[in-house]
Amino acid sequence: YQGIRPAPGYPACPDHTEKRLLFGLLDAEQNAGIRLSENFAMLPASSVSGFYFSHPESCYFGVGRIDKDQVADYAARKGETI
Image (tube, rainbow, N blue to C red; front, side):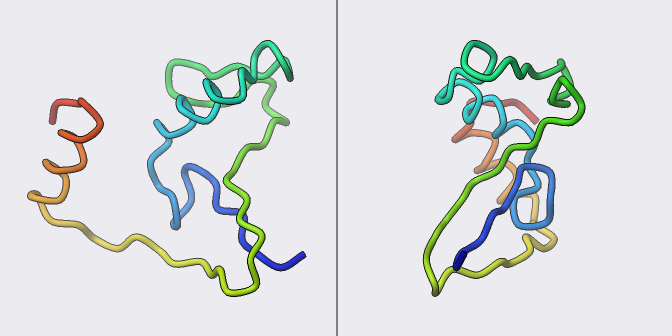
């Protein structure tokens, strides 16, 4: 396998709320019997999820510290308040 498998909640993809979109696209509860708790924990606990990119030039990177303006921009694009 050549590629990366970043998962929500880890350094390359720290925002757990992205699981909501992923689970909606996959209809995970209906198709796999996996649901999200109100805090985005996957149930059953043995469940895993991630984004799979199969390309030899893909690589991991960590999201470092971000400034308040970046938080405000991200929140606005997601329709969230801060």
